[in-house]
Length: 272
Ligand SMILES: [Zn+2]
Image (cartoon, rainbow, N blue to C red):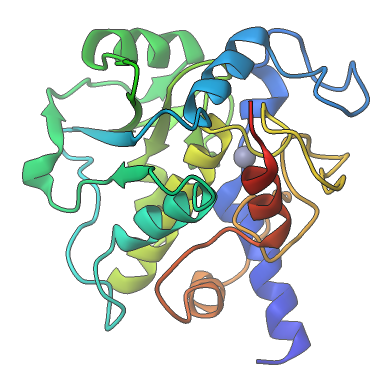
């Protein structure tokens, strides 16, 4: 592809991954620390330290979906299973822990449907209340889980937001209606959704500089908790009207891990 196309795709990541988790949900605030890990809340840090504990042998991803907001499943074009992106990406983060297994559901029967919530607009309090009602964080000596909750409606602070991770919480939210509103082909919709899922789980698991220390400073100073590497799924940029098909066709040339080198280096080096 041409450099211009690459740049367009990079910019479009902004549309997809516009995420406010670092902007307003960190109890200690952002920007107050000017780098380092000082901007990460104690709760977020302690959660991340569990996720990266080498004695944890099973990390389970629990998926919930509001009626009418079910995740995409099944084959993704010729690239295999839709959820293989989440599975391979999260597995790549923990590849330095040989005993670690990551359990990811791939079909709706392995996910949990919840009742219609009838909400057009979600505050962070609304979202946390929903999570409290449906998700149980389970941490034992060798197992832990993280939740992904698909809802209808939009985030109260911006209808452009596709997903959010409330800092310090072991779960993330995906705004299905916003993903659907992007349009595109069935395949590009699946890819978009998987990218948002991987991005938000990345935040929950400590990326970028969100509990996992950086080996080299690659945090975007303008968009904390995101990488400067604009080819990585953890990149953030402002919303931009570009063609979704251009974006997804480049980022998803083949199935697999969506995290790039800097993020993987951080994850592999982090030993709490
Ligand atoms: Zn983000």
